[in-house]
Length: 169
Image (cartoon, rainbow, N blue to C red; front, side):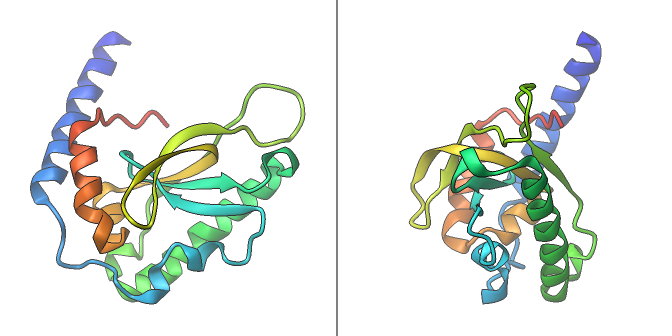
């Protein structure tokens, strides 16, 4: 296991460095239809956030004590389908929106969501801790960077370059 982990960590570090060297694409999605708020506007239960430094769309529960894993999974699935459809119309590279849907579980009985704290971007570019992240959509780094609002792209790239990057899902 140690050998496998060491090889994978080295591979991810090489991949991260290649992403950082590539920098910001000139194919930024600036269309108003690509804003995260368009994909969670029908939900009073969950909101989407840009996470830092991992290339993830975080899902924040508005009221974690009343949110269920089933409603979280349904929300995440709907966001993925909607995002792939919308973003593919803007850029054909998103036609195969490869991502992982990850939701936190605690191993406790019941069907409530489990919260974890994580770093998220605020619209003005500051980074805050959010204690109510209940899951995330792990995505390709270059697509994440392309989808980020332009005022956050260089900030995210700087944070990403300093972090250990290893996808454990």
